Length: 501
Image (cartoon, rainbow, N blue to C red; front, side, top):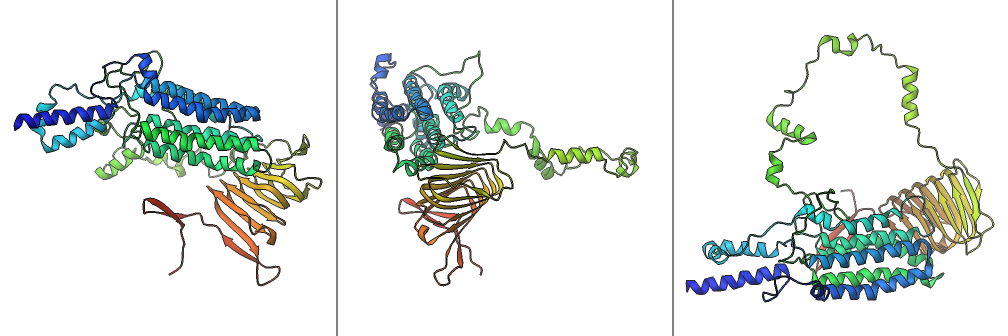
């Protein structure tokens, strides 16, 4: 009976090892390069590139310009990940799934298990420095894409932002276990796309009635991740990347320091090679040391004693009178950096640019048409009037700015601003508010059907005409706090309501 139990335990351990390493027990100990390329997971990812990434690249080539530049980086990132998947099949960084399962069996019958796994090699924890070096090529491409979104906003900012933000989904390959600070691979891909979807939707709204090529680009970008990458990860790596059990141990080059992990950066536990026990034995620094001293009652042990000559009232160099030079230096340090030159002009007959207007209450764009757009940047304490119909209006990095407009064809956007007041006298199908604090929206009767989208914003109030009294406004505050409840297999989100008792 004892021998049969040992045989069963040996079989169970073998199956768990195979599951954690992603190979069958009868597989050969080492794989050749041709075998790796023909591996089902590598072939499936190549198919994903041929189907989804190729469609995305074709749409970008039609548009050209900055959109093509960022799209090439997206294609490069997917090709880099394909290379990592191939290398992953030849690299030994053990997963923890089988190890944890074996631990559960050990608790049930530790003596029999010890005899059953006596001949197995010890399992290693992932080499975290080597993992950072392994992910370095992917991290470099994601960084290059992020740099394209920096600086002054271009006409294709939403394209650049959507593509660059979406690349964080490829960091699923950095998942090493539930304690690494990341969501599991499938959830990580979905969450990363949610960050990019906000800007992808902006592209769809702006070009849905203007240029089908941009619409095709945005749809191809989304389908590349949902369902493309998500379904791939779900089929082949739902619990994380599957490393080779017999391959080489990946380690960083001694000539160069290890690179950081691919963004978004996980918590420190993912790339911290020191155990919690070792870190607790080190002397604490900063606020940790303060709290430790408080708990030990040694708060004043390291303080210097103040003698009489050190007191301010007894020091000759302190007269109590603030010097003029010192006062001027403090005032100068609070002066913000000088803005660029004011700008108010029509560029290439299609885009009105209003920049760095300070204390201007009489700005008017009178000669405009439905094919033109308006971009307002860096204005402060000013008022802009747009009596005609334009395609879209964007307010970016403005403070205490007022805008009165008639009609927009696509959307009215407010981003990175504060204290903005907007009045729509005609119709606006969409209003987008992103990263803005303090916004008053006045809607006319013709614009009550508008769709308002908000993200990372606060203090947004919408005023609509009263149905009972002519000339009066009824104010509605848009919620900025939400309650998320897990129910029937999914989360239900409702605005938080506050009422006095």
